[in-house]
Structures are given as C-alpha cells and as structure tokens.
Length: 250
Length: 250
Image 1 (cartoon, chains in turn green, yellow):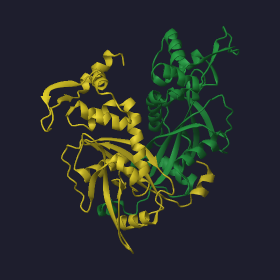
Image 2: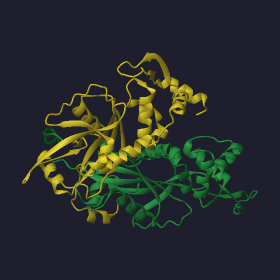
Image 3: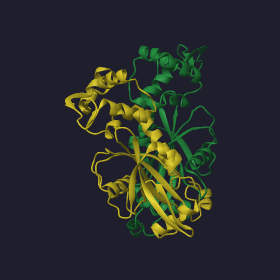
Image 4: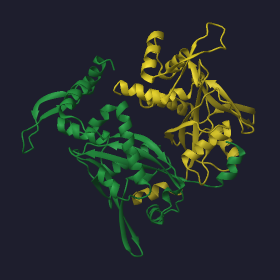
C-alpha cells in the first residue's frame, strides 16, 4: 500500500456480510431457499424476497458467520457449505428500498456493504425448522428466479452460485448427492443432473454411466410412494465411488 | 437479518482490501511477486515481505481494485486475473507489527480487515515496470515461501492461491499458457506443468499428450539462447486447442 492509498480511502469503512444461496431438490425441481422481506413504506407495505444473510459479527470468521445464518434459519448442522465469490459493486446497496430496510433492521447507518457469497446444498427431505422469528423462509423453483426481482444484487449472486455448482461438478461430482435423499431413484438422479448441468441425458446411457462412474449401489428395494410401477432405489457410497474411479484410471 | 443481529454487530465496521497473488514462470521455477515492507521500530528497522494489495477505494468494485493494484505495481494491463477466495479471520491483522504498519501507511485507525484474494498470472518475459515509488517488488521462488514469514496471513493466502490453480487446471487448462512465453519449449511446458500439479511427468508421454490434448503447434524454429542442442519451439493456439478437444469428444 502506498501513501496515495490513504488519501483516496479517507475514513471510508464498508460493512461486510455473508449471503447464503441454499439449494434443495424435491425429486423434480431444483429449489432455492428465500426469505420474504416486508418493508413499510409511505404507500403501504412492499414485499419481496432475499437470500438469507447477515452482517458478520465483530469476532466472527466468514465461514462461522455463514454457518450461523444457516443454523439460525434451518436448525440444521453439518450442511455442505462452500464460499464461492465476493460481491463488492459500490452500487449493490444503492436502491433506497434496500437502504431503508437495512437501517431499520440493523438500527445503524449502513453505507456500502461487501458481501461474501456461500453456496449450501441441503437434502430437502431433512426436517427443517425455520427458527428465526418474523422470518418467512420458503423454497422456490430456481427457474422462477428469472421472473423475480430479489433484494440488492441477490439475483446475480444466485446466478453465480448456479454457475459455480456447474463448474464444481468437474472437481467434486459427488456434491450432487448432497441434494438427494439417501436412497434415490435413477430418475431423480437424472433429473437433478440435467437441471444442474443444463443437459438432457439419454435414459439408458445415463444409468450405465452413473453405475460405472460413481459405483452406485443398486439396492434390493423399490420406492413405494408412487402410483406407477415402483422404481428401484440406489445409494451413493463414497468409498465405492473412489474405487470405481481408480478402476477407470481417474 | 433478524433483530438479534443488530445487537451483536454494534457499530462495528471492518475495512475491505484486495490482495494479489501474482505468479510468474522463468522456464524452471514458479515465482511469486512480493513486496518488501520496512517498518521502523524501537529496536531499529524490521523488514519482511507481503503480497501486493490495497484497501479498496470508496467507489471501487473489487475487481477494479485488484486491477489497479496490478497496474500500479507492474504497469501491465490485460493480465489474467481471477478472484479466488476471501479471508476474514478476525485475528488476521492482530499482530502488533501489522497493525503498526497499517496505521502508518493508511494514516487511519484500522480495525479488522477482510481481504479478497485475487490470483494473477504474468508472462515473466513481459517488460514489467515497477511504478510505485518506495516499493521494492521482486520475484521469489514459490518453494521458498515455506521458509518465509509473510505479513498478515499472506502465507495462507498464497497457499490457497496455489491450491486454486491446481483445481482450476481441470476447468481451465489453458491458463498455464498465461505463464509461458508465446513460443516455448516442451521442457518449459513440462517443468511448469509438474510444478503446478506437483507431478513428475514422463518426458515422452508428456509430449504426446500435450500435442494431442492442447493441439499445440510445432514450429519450424528452435530456441537459440541455450548452450546445448537447440530445442524446438511450440505455440499454443486457442482455436486449435478447442478443435483438438472436440476431436476427442471432450
């Protein structure tokens, strides 16, 4: 840092927050967990959605803050959580509606906020207790994001999180199984895979590929809660997946 | 954000900075660009090294701040630059020496700093003008980092940047060529590849693989500045690399 820096920065002090993009999968649709925000304005109440997040506490590491947000919101621990990108456009909190809401909820004069984006993957089947009072959290179809105007730059953050999953799939393909129930059908896995990677897999080839690549266990069980012919269930096993990978010379 | 948040955050306001991990390759060694920092203390002068960085300016986006740091330091534009991770341990600036230096250079009372890490790849052969006055910037062998105690948590940031390149290689294998001169020998490429991925490639297989995977152009030129038998030069061409990838069904 040179002396020039000091002149430019003045006494300028941004706040730092974390925002969590939480994905779930219900067997057919990729979902995102959003919080309803209601703001009282002169013309009445205005309501929209935002990502769960928080300004970081004074003695808190970034990861710790993200874990706290997730835990306060869902009651869950041991969630797949991954920092993916920070967002610092000076204009990201310039909307008067967002500034107004910030001042009311934090009871502080808040200037610029730099936020650290976290990606979380949740098994939607886990019992989630939405603990925070006054917080209406709900799952929304990821596809509906295109027609929603989220608070701040949260549309962009959600889009970047989706891109990040897509990229990470090459490095950590097992992350998909964080979104599936422990026992799942091949159709569920294929739906999820195609949603995340924006592909359209061939039914037969997909099954062959998955059994080979991930060393999936085919169970002697079928899914019973469906009206049509009961489909077979599969299970992912990290140890077997690694062995399968080694066999292929990966 | 719930009301509880407001009570915890108090009037607490961290600063935000960017830090750049700049890598170069001299044909044999992977290098990192560090700045010498000299601090006047009671017992005399203390000197150590740090990553180039800066507190972000008031109206500056994160990317813009990183580009500014790079440009001020090297005079270069159009550098491969990539945000890779943010670091926010509350203790990362708790060393009295770091605090002392921060206050002197910024002329501000600086509390906690959250920093956004950027990775930059430079062709070491490009003419670099170290523009910032009072800044002694020099290339150091990445391997020597293990024996150096850098300022703040810069050792950790540099380690994470190295890990990041290793991971990104699966997604953006072409990034290696950002570090090589436009025309390079197969030995240079192999040295670099093995340094980054911590592998030890077989000479013959490596050449075959590189020609196939990256569609490298074999030039009718040899490297002339070496005392031993002049090695052949190669060139990377993104268009040909993509064509090669398609042929392999990638």
